[in-house]
Length: 448
Image (cartoon, rainbow, N blue to C red; front, side, top):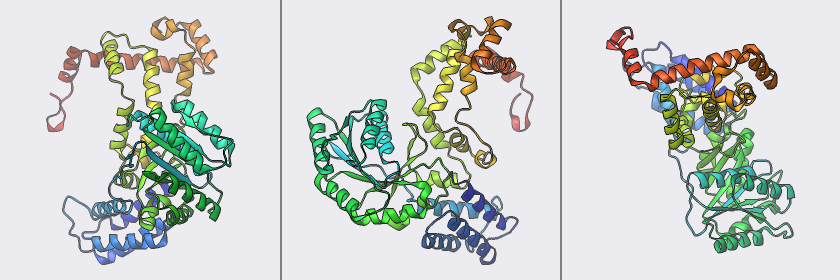
């Protein structure tokens, strides 16, 4: 995410390295590089110029503290301006009304239908809402079928009427159905086109006028850069939407849409899609995104994702099993599944400060655990719960059954044994105290 932009901004900041003070002379070259980096990322020209001018104005004449380098200070100024450019504060979705009605608009292929399913899933799992999905794309039967598949996947009802070709009456009927059945939210997925046209705009405007939604969201593919901003302007002039959703932010995103939309359209980005899974939808926090663009990581979002997958009862049971030295491959598999639910692996690792740049050229496959899972699934229930019984004959059977070598299985068994020993030691307070006591004395009073 934003790797090229991050690299170019990092190079721009290095111009100030070793300088004793931020001055008009040494700032000029840096801001020029920043503007070039933004334009390369497909940021709107006026936005890029205004941004770099603002950074320059705030930076010139700043005194550099002895503990802070000019590059660090300039990075801080750029970070604050990036956050401001993208909106500054996180803006919540409006869920007023009974039921609250959310209208989804955008071009065909932008990810509207998938986002509708993700939003319904988020409302169920995080907001404890009871949503109804409404299929109002009367031109693509596949879109209606897709919404039904997503609804079944997340356990949310989908209202549709394939015989009806009027999106206005379908939307109205869906809201009436929601009131009758006690749904508190209606998410209306509308038709898109391959390009902006009058018929499309008139139709979406008619739907909005008929249902007066509490929230209208414009969904845009973040990989389309300035095209996304131009489309957003056209939609906003016609339907005056409330917020923007950036999809496919996990792909090869240059960053133009994320950095330009707020300043050009003056509407907040409210959600970002970060993968194909229904859980891969995040609230948009401008400050956190600025952190990631400048390679500072995003620990808060990483912790939040971990907390979402945290099951207190499961954690309590696991703690007891570790204390009794009963940690087995079933527990190991459960931990892997929890990590996988947190999202795209490279995206997760990139949230750790300082790691993003280090792994930018490293290919981290989302199926990184596939080989380990295959070996565990090739074990019998008895072998999973008691790995010590896995002898030579069993090892060959497990390796062959999982498509791995015996060496790879041996490596997994050894790693599992080491993990189990460490967990047992951590679960035993006396052992932990002994381990701390025997730690070598470190500078600054750490250890003995």
